[in-house]
Length: 196
Image (cartoon, rainbow, N blue to C red; front, side, top):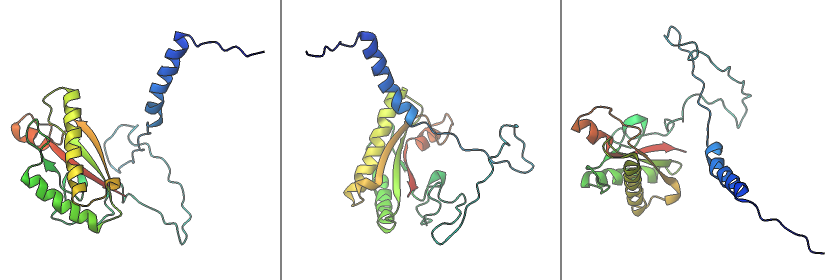
């Protein structure tokens, strides 16, 4: 006797599809860090709540780690390369509606490649950013093109592609919230977040 199988209904297929779409969103969610209280600071009761530190048993292979390393601060940097937002690598700028690397951007990326060759433990996330003009979708696509242009140029200079990843923030994380041409120019950039 042959077993009979029923075909799933449309509702069951829709439920399965919705579940698959929601799974990655749930998996990538992270809890925000606990905020430390600052003595004498003015903040709400929620902001002054602290999480007690867990004791660490130190040994030959274990040491307590403070705040260093969170933004690549444990990686020595060259003062001539220090960029915005605490990165040891300077941002590069782009023209309006463009992902083309300027001569100045290429020169900066060549310095970045030398730094990365001498800091082989470093991993970099190349972030593409835009100014606020244009739609969200347009700016996300343009930010991705900017990040890839910077990453591809670094790879062409000998940096391993496995050490570089890209992300686009579009217009969602402006460096300068101003409404001037100078502010817009600061926001059209690729930022290099360095980690291990």
